Length: 71
Image (cartoon, rainbow, N blue to C red; front, side):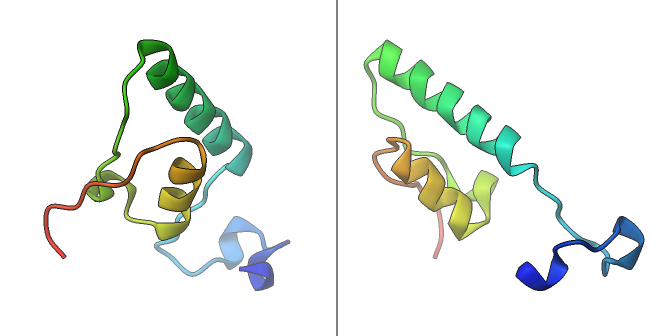
């Protein structure tokens, strides 16, 4: 991942996923707060995540686990 730092968007191989990590972390924090206030546990579905690093961030934010329909 570090080898991509500093590249312009025209230098990236496509298709490419570009994530604003600050925004992602803000969204995860807001989601975690929502479930905490509601007093319920949450298990995000891997179908919507698809990226293990994001699943780990959700777990660190308080998700009880992740849901997977198929392995």
